[in-house]
Length: 235
Image 1 (tube, rainbow, N blue to C red):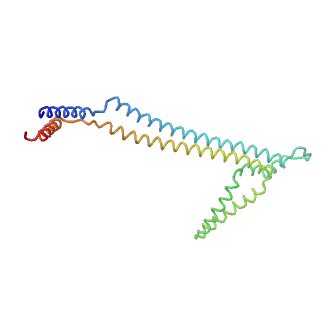
Image 2 (image 1 turned 120 degrees about the horizontal axis):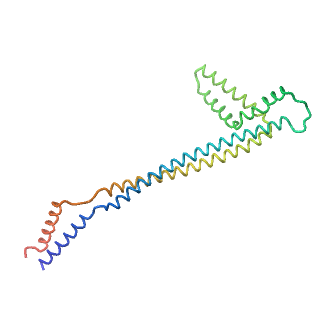
Image 3 (image 1 turned 90 degrees about the vertical axis):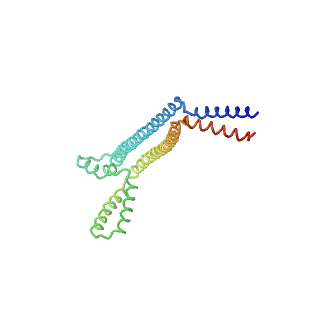
């Protein structure tokens, strides 16, 4: 029975050696891992390109909304300044002066009402903390210029304000859409980066082939033989 036990242990030992020696990553698995890394890299680059393209698209669309908006504002301002059915005679000089006073300002300063108020508040905050006299004078003059512009914009005809408000709403919707799309793509990029990091770690692990040397195999076999002898005692 002792010999059968030793034989059985030796068989187990050899089986374990075969198992351990067989822990070599198949080349197909390694290639699949490399391909996955390459695909994730390409996917990440594609998302970056898509995000850049969509960003340019939304910027172009916003610029187009502003450009077309100014055209609508100009038309509205002209209709207010020169109502249909007016029988008054108008000279070229009168047209020029009226355009310069009642049309051009609304085109030049379209969509700036909120920006003007924000700029004035910012200048007020800077004036509170400014000590240098010359800089304080400069900021005060700048603030006066913006306040004069604010007063001028307050005289904007109601019809012009209404059409500008509609265009401003369209512009805000487009900006919010662009922000949402950009946020979604940021999340997607982060997810792909995490997947790539995980895949890189797996690929590095797969690259390590677990093999044993002949010396390690002999030592392991000898150890199992000694263990078998010990189990059998001195009998």
